[in-house]
Image (tube, rainbow, N blue to C red; front, side, top):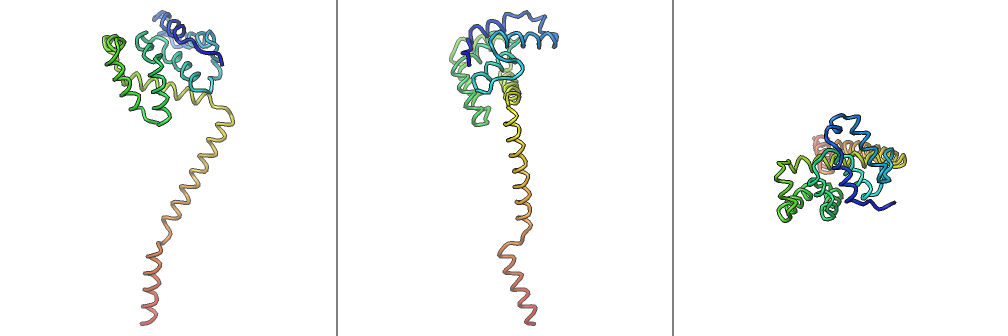
Length: 183
């Protein structure tokens, strides 16, 4: 994979005029153009984390203010995003972003814009998940279906086991039968 020059990517995303962005069709065309410009296939996102992250920056970032995109460009934020994704815990990312915003001048710029940071982080994460889903191969999809089927079978077996009498219940039942028979 070709390394992604994040500085150039951020400049290209933020350099696009906002009136163009208002039309969804033109926004999609802009996203596709940017993806091609940075050698990211618009038809099939890359499967590696860095490629998906860069792809997400493009899809999410068109029309967003440059300081906020700069935030997601930071290697520290990217690595924390990966950790949050790996642990399925967005609060890891939110706390790191808050700390980052408190520690760096970029945080003052972001806060001065009145951006709802939690909302934007959630939107970015949602776009990331959408890109991940589109990057799946047919084999990945088949594996997902098989895991889903296996999960359903396990749930069914658990339900059947819960309906079975317990060993203690069986003992009591046998004891009650023995007492009834003896009488």
